[in-house]
Image (tube, rainbow, N blue to C red; front, top):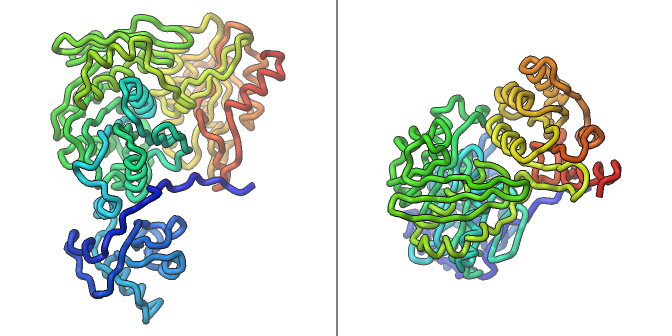
Amino acid sequence: MKESIPPILRPERVEPVGLADFARRFGLELTTSDPVFITGISMNTNDLRAGDLFVAMPGVKTHGAAFIQKAVDAGAVAVVTDLAGKAAIYEQIPSFKLPILVLEAPRTHLGNLAAFVYGNVAGNLPKLFATTGTNGKTSTTYLLEGLLRQIGEVTGLTSTAERHLAGEIIVSRLTTPESTEMQALIARMRERFVTSVAIEVSAQALSQLRVDGIHFDVVGFTNLSHDHFDDYPDFETYLAAKAALFTPERASVGVVSLDSRFGNDFVAASKIPVVTISSNPAVKADWNVSVTEQTASHTAFTLQGPNGEFVASSVPLIGVHMAANGGLAIVMAILAGFDWRLIAQRISGGIDAYLPGRTELVSGATGPSVYVDFGHSPDAFLHTLTSLREVTKGRLFMVFGADGDRDASKRPEMARIAAQNSDVLVITDHHPRFENPVTIRQVLVESALSAVPELELYEVSPPEQAIIKAVSLAKPGDAILWAGPGHQDYRDIQGKRTPYSARDLARQALRESGWN
C-alpha cells in the first residue's frame, strides 16, 4: 500500500513577485536584468512547483544544492543559496542559467522570504494565535478555534491532527509545518477570508525556525513536563525553547498557565507582557478556572478575571486539565480584543469543538467505556487517568506502549504513572520505528511491576490483540483508556507507515465481545 502524504496547501492564486523586487527587499545581489517572476517558494524539490523560488540550504547529511537538477526539472525559476551551495551548483552544471541569489544561513531567513513571496505582511493578516506547552496545546488550539467560531469569526487552525480553512478539514503532516508551508497556508487562509487562526506550536518548531516570519497577536503556554529529552537535554533547555515564542519578534502579548511547576519560571523567561491563569485555587493568578461539574461527556467550569470578568461554560472533554485549557483559550481571545461579555453569552452552553483523539469516547451505550487518547508522556497519563477515575464506577483499564527511537528516559515514569493509577494494565507496542519492541515492552513491564508489584498486568503484542484482551476483561461500568495512538491512522514500523486505527480496532473489539 502506497503511503499517503497529505498535500502542501497553497493559495489558489498568487500575485507574481518580481525577482528584482525580492532581491531589493532582502538586500541581495541580482546578476540578471531579465524579468523573472516567482509565484511560490520551496526548500523541498518533492513539493516544488513551476514558478517557484528554490531555496537550497545546507542540511544534516547533504546540501540542498545537490538536488538542483530536480528543482530545474520541476520548474524552478531562480535559486537562493549560500556560497557553498552556489559553488556546488556550478560544479554540477557549469552552464547553469537560472539566477542565483547568495544568502548565507538561508534557513534563518526562510520564514521572512516566504512571507514576502506570499504577501503575508502587516495589515494584511488575520488575527494569529499560537499555543505551546508539553501537553494541552492541541486541545487549547481546538477549543480556541471553537469559541472564535461561536463569536462569529471565520476560523483557521493548524495542529498535530488537522488543518482547518474556513470549514475545510485536511490531515496534518507535522505539528507545525515548515515555514514555507506555513506561510503558504496562511496565504490560503487569507484567500478564504479567514479572520482568526489558531496555531499549535511545538518546541521543535521554534528551534527549527518553522514559525519565523509570523508575528502572533496572542500566544499561550499550557505547561511543561517530562518529554522530548531526546531533543533537549534538560528542563531548562526545553523551557527556553518554548519561551522563544514569548519574544517581541514573535508575539505581542501572552497568557501563561501556572498549573505546572514551571509556570512561574516561564513568566520570568517571557520577554513580552503576560497575564497568568490557574485552575489551582491555592495558586495566585490573574485569571482563575473553577470546575463546577465533571461527567463522562463534559467538564463545566467558571472563569473569573481580575476586573470582574466572569464566564461560565464547559468543554466536551473530561478533566480539570481540559477545563484549564478552555479557560486559557478564552483569556487568549479576550487579550486579542474580543469582548468577554460576547464570549460569555455565545459559549454559555459550552465550547463547541471536536478534538480528534483527545480522550475520545469510541464505545456505545452498552458495555465498558473505551477512550482513545494521543497522550504519550507521564504528565498526560496522570491527568487523563485521574480524570477518568472521577467518572468511572467500575475498574479502570489502561492500554499503552511507548515510542521507539524517541525519548527513552520517560518510559519508566510513564509505566509507573500507569501502574499507580489504573486497576488493570495492558502493555503493548506503539511506534517501534527501528527499535526492538520487545526491549521497549520489557522496560515498561519491569517499571510498572516495580511500582505496583501486585498489579494485574498483561503484556500483549501486537496492539490489535492488546485491545481485544482489555475488552475481554472489562465489564459494564468499567473504562478502558488506550493511550498513545489517538487520532493517528498509522504505526511507524521500520520506517514505514502501516495503516492502523485505534478507533476502528477498539470498536471492532467491542463488537466481537457482543457490545454495540
